Length: 324
Image 1 (cartoon, rainbow, N blue to C red):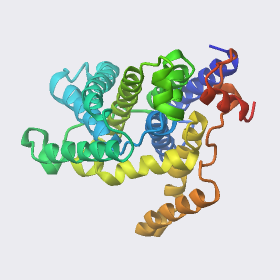
Image 2: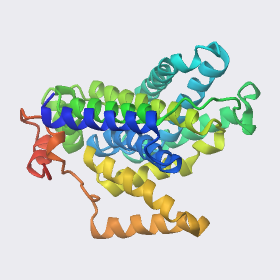
Image 3: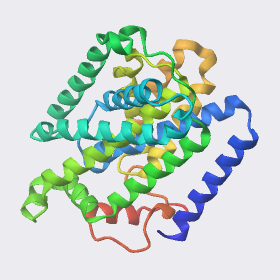
Image 4: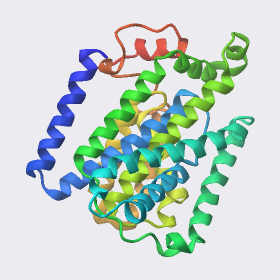
């Protein structure tokens, strides 16, 4: 890991710990920052599929719901009350693992299709997850899951956001990542060149699902209450807005998109329901004026490894690097 990448992450984690430990920021500001961090995890993980791989998935809210409910079951019903705060990291990892397994099982049949068909499959998956949760009385059904403690804090959110950025970044610049980028450019040509397209797509989808589950676990233990309605199509749409606002095929774009979207939602809160009208209008205008998003196919220099990569897709990212 290069110093240009490692030092900023360590500095941000240290600052977040000091803010949490000493209350250096107002609780509302900390809450907004935690929303930003969770949205960064969601945006970066979804961009791996929709941006880097060139597929179109709209079922991310379903994976987030699985992670949220898995972690809530562990901390509320399985962990001893006295140990639950200390075992919370295990619950988050377990939520990610369970979600990754579900994502892998979904990916096996899903990647026999492409484009619009994959979107339909993942859309149906999200609706199925929501419907199942609404009819499970043991999990509160439509009433929601109660009794969740607030174990999520700014330090944990920053830690997992950095982990998502670090792992996705390393994946993209690995041999698997080069395979993912080649699938986006031309899957048939990639397969002819010897890339195991099915394997790289399965791995990418599983990694994306893992971090969606992690985000769900953090979200559940931040709000201290979850119900199926929180993970409907609207939630998936918000994730898509963040990805395409920041820019496809760009980790930096996912970070920027998540930050802008979350902060704007808070600033526009006085407008009530009209803020949900203004945000899509802004997205439409952005798609017209800048179809690839704010940072589409470009990247911050500190997110690019010092050792170059030969993939055409990765080379595009390096050539369009911005900032220091």
